[in-house]
Image (tube, rainbow, N blue to C red; front, side, top):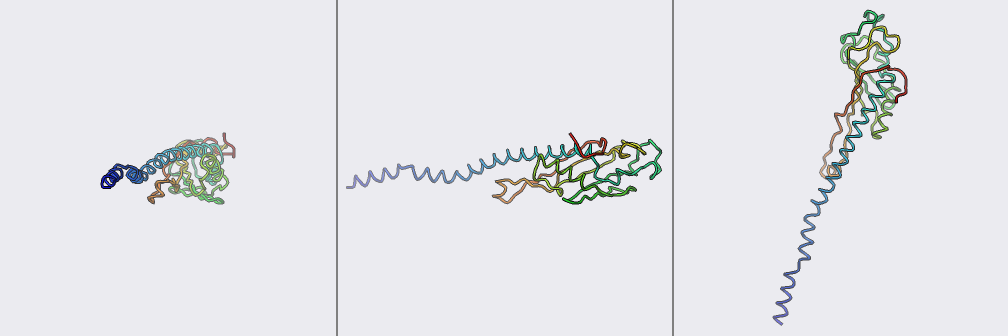
Length: 209
């Protein structure tokens, strides 16, 4: 009888099933965290690539279609600001414009003192956003900022388009990456800083390649 109890105790002591289960239970959360972390990194790289490409598509569209600050588009610096015909417009007369918008409106503000009207073309703004959404469908008008900055190009009295050919920069703001691991720990990653720039070409029309 004693021998049977002794052998039974030895079998229980040598049984590794429960120990393996306990070890697996301890390792499993770390393993899942590692796997989801790898997935998150891949998704993050994909999201960043989409955001960057969206700004590139947006600025290309903005460079060859109607400019958002419509007051600038129709302003003649030669007759209305006394700039000699054919001369370039100075940065004092065109310090730059920043445009933002919603689904139905656009708002352009001067970066200094502007003599031209600060009227805005909401259709042009939303056409740019629509082009960007082809690459990143979650972009809304509130996520897009368009800057028209001084470049020194263009000339007063241009009969074929705006008198200035600004550097256009399209950027994304207020977008977040929804991380699986971040949701577990309450953290988010901002998709900020994505921007692309080009110089204005003709600045008229509604079609781009």
